[in-house]
Length: 513
Image 1 (cartoon, rainbow, N blue to C red):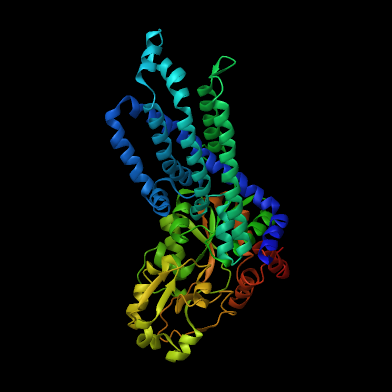
Image 2 (image 1 turned 120 degrees about the vertical axis):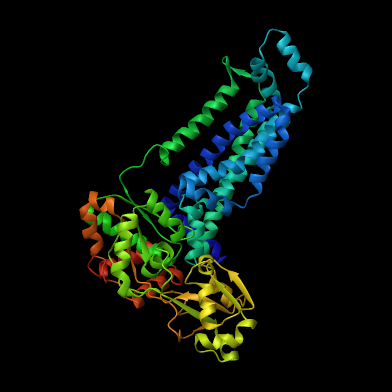
């Protein structure tokens, strides 16, 4: 009951936020549905006409349909970048199978004699297709469209993983900030949109069962015009035809990044008069945001020095702040990007062990883990297992061989530790939930983890166009300590406050705003 009240409360308090996400969700899913109707319908007609192509075409589309959505998004990013474009393309691919299959099946069920009669009465094959075949096949086609549309609206929630908009933003942000009410609210709205969409298409299906012509205009023309309108407006809205000169901020799926994104937006708009837009919680973090910076989809994002050194510059050596001049020079030379506004805190890695386990095996530092690791389950974020300075290097340095590993979303790992699903996990030194967790943080007795000081990476051309932006970002230099960042994270993750509210309070307290 308490959670239900929290969901109602968040709807009332953040109605503008949800309305914006609903609009984004409808445009992304609507564009994919419109494109799929046009392309899938055309493909269905063609393979009906050339039946030999039916099996390979349906087989190919069916194969694409079986690819996991995360894999599909990851595959598209190098070609189309981060954001709505890749999301719409991926959703369109998934929507094609039911559309192609329904069109082909509907047309195949029509008696050939009816088509022959239409042609025998003087009609062309195209006339017979539009006036006879498609209307007769429409019940089956509409069934496919309804299933496809419902699935697409639901699947659009995953678009936020690559920095696209929609209600997935609320779900992912709720998971990241330990706010179940926000997660449920986003999920509930997606379900409602899917049901409303199915109902609306049901009404259209009933309308199409009426006489074939309305005021002399074939209904196929109405359907084609509607699909074309959805595609065109979506393209204009989401950047298929250009991009306004706005400062685009990206953040990783971490509470402190959501807070810093809000800080950046407020400082930029307060000091420069420029409009700033945030793409929050981009899944995959640096691995997806940095390509977005290179392509121009993003202009600025908070990054960590050690991450930039190992993941972006691909340096194998351990980073220390003595290397910062080299780091900045290489960013400028290779990517035409600059580091501006170093916040001051160092969000490095640590290892936390469930207290009961730590006491059982008398664990105090990383080296102690060697004797207990085979009986333990290790949990970390997805990218930690792939980083050059991550799991493989850690195990090699300390001679660790864990019995089992678990990939976890950053917003779920503390819950997994509390539930006993994992025994040991990677933490960040500024984690807000760390103070409330029943865990022991071990000592890095060999100083394995490098420095991870946080600053802003900005595209040089944006700074050149707007010199005032650099001055605004420099106001953030050295204003946040490790303890202050942890306190802000705690206020969001445990205190239930909004990142923007926490960010604004902190900036006003520091006299920045």
